[in-house]
Amino acid sequence: MGDVVKSFLEPLMEVYPLPKHANTNSEKFFGVYVQMLGSFGDDVLSAAAADIMANRTARTFPLPAECNAVCKHAVDTVKYGKHEPSKDGNRHEHLPFEQRYPDWSERRISAANALVCCQIGREALAEKWIVSLHDFCRENQRLPDRHEMAVVRKKGIAVQKDFEDMAARSQPNSLLINLVSLRRSMFDRLEKAVNA
Image 1 (cartoon, rainbow, N blue to C red):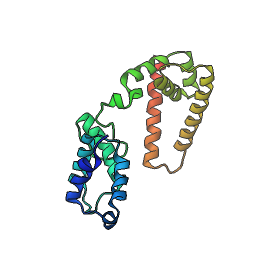
Image 2: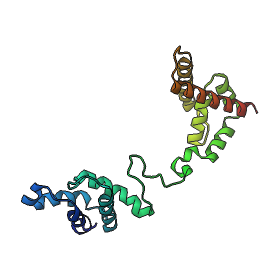
Image 3: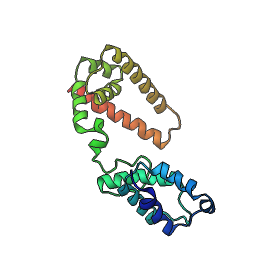
Image 4: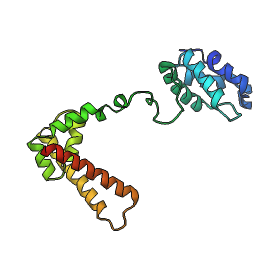
């Protein structure tokens, strides 16, 4: 628990004017910030205050929700020593691809390729649900059991039908063309792997 007033609010008060209602009831005004930000350490609070002063262009004192968001981002800055622009969903951008998306690692894809090279894979290929089977194997690192197989098969056949329906549209747009092309290339790649 850090000192919110000393590490965070005092530096901000040197740059941003307090709202008028803060002067009439300062204990309540600062209490909201202390309650919301009190779980952060002094290093995070100081980093967040510095981030706000360096990047905020508004002239008013920042709202508690904004301060909380910057403090959450500052946790990564302090922990990993790397500042990244504040964006939603960007909290692990510093990690290598395979750590951010482990089920898309080369190892997982290769293992799934090997798993689908069996009788079940040949059946899935013939019935055109091989992509869903491969996805299951990549995510779970195993073949589905008999109960899961029915779900994977049903889902795979439905998705394949959707793609066939999209491909048959009379006026496809560029996104649709790219999606159908990607699906076709995935199917072709898996067909080669299963038939090899």
